[in-house]
Image (cartoon, rainbow, N blue to C red; front, side, top):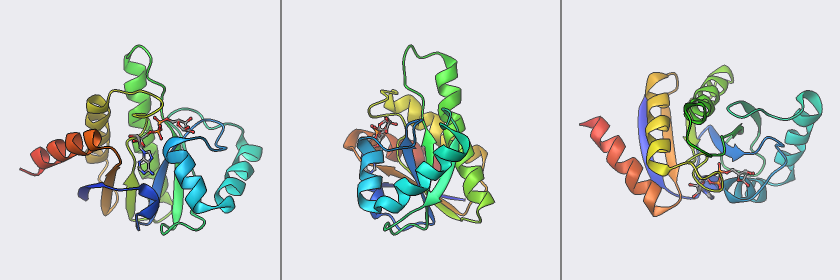
Length: 170
Ligand code: AR6
């Protein structure tokens, strides 16, 4: 499985599925969630509302899949990252679950290429370095797709990921 790192707006990435760092309401928010809903259009929100009506809120660490509306991707996986609070192990496990469950859901839907944002490292305040370690490890431990793209938005995350992924290749 190929792993790549780019600095981009995830709404512009052309892969089979992009992942959204959503909240448990699934009804949108700011940050990457806001950007995905804004660029993807109302079809994504309608699909999220449909899921809400069927199953209620999405628990932290879990993932659901919808259309990608007007985005270049085929699908969007919405996963709910943990809010970083005191840094107990549960937050780490929950973040790992976001990556793992998104990969499994992509595989189940016959999607081969996936792009992840840096889940929980914005409004949810997860330390970036630790979040990157968890993300890369989770992906490496589940090499079930053809390609994973880590889409970093801010310079700090981009540098952290570049360092870690390059170290990995060597
Ligand atoms: N493309 C890629 N990455 C982005 C983009 C973008 N267009 N915009 C921001 N990021 P955040 P969280 C990066 O706050 O911490 C929402 O309101 C950003 O630089 O979007 O998981 C939800 O509804 C950061 O590295 O998500 C939830 O309530 C990363 O995306 C809450 O925020 C995640 O930052 C989730 O918080």
